[in-house]
Image 1 (cartoon, each protein chain N blue to C red):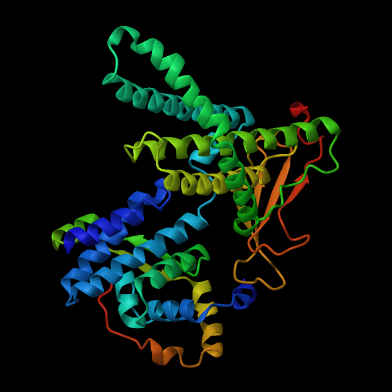
Image 2 (cartoon, rainbow over the protein chains, first blue to last red):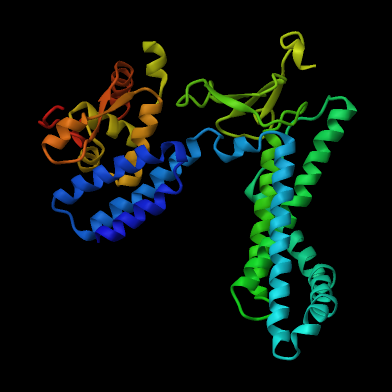
Length: 296
Length: 108
């Protein structure tokens, strides 16, 4: 029982933001210790431990945007990360295809002709088939389903690029387009790698691949849209330094919101606590150019 | 300040937790026992109350806990704002005092 409750707390602690994890863990371990001292059944202790998930989830939801997101704050680091992720996953895909081909051929030919056959007769055609022929329609369909699911899991509001000059607007939409392309492609490569790692079938596991691909597409598209909302329309950096304004309990007349500042001083993002349609959604407020003359 | 505090509306659960802290249940587990609420409700409620500055928390001194061969506890204490908000909540929830009656507990 001790081990089970400890494992539950360990699993729940993964939801807690890293900066708060140690204290959270200490608090729950202490409370568990006191609970064990009193006369409680195993079931009650288990139910107590399961409550840790709600607590951890609350902490995760209420934590300001920080941690690894902040490392992708500049547009260059974000695109670089996505490109590197795609490269690694695509290499994994090729490696899997080559190793599968190697296993298949090893029983039929000698080593001398092996590499030649492998590259020119097996790997390249198979990779071509996977990427451009057989799977293409599956990917289109999965992507289409994902596009239909995305409005249900996030708002399609992208943020504010309106009223800007054409150059920032092109950069804004260009950056979004690159994320839209690189995110789902990474999801596809990942689903391919996973489907081929989990089964010995040379064709991979189609069900695992399709479902992973669908989940990956939805997550990637959702991330791309949500990330875009937090980007400054001028410099495309992620807004930072959250500051809560208003009373959290007075939601009717005096709704609270959190302000985030562009790291280059271009403006402030106002993020309402409760999203309602219309003008109460996230709003960018540009700062007067005279305040930070050095940024231009 | 008092006017602003009175404007803050507590949910019934939060009011129960605040009431139990006021009557002397000063750590998470005892709040849970006093209110009968599950851990998944009590701990997030405590964090919300602390975030809204209605309660403050502090960890017990390690030396004190080690002397008694037990882990240190996290104690909660109601703030002045918390007291004002609780007063307002009692008017909204008249049965609050009956739900979490006062107890005799040893103070840290």
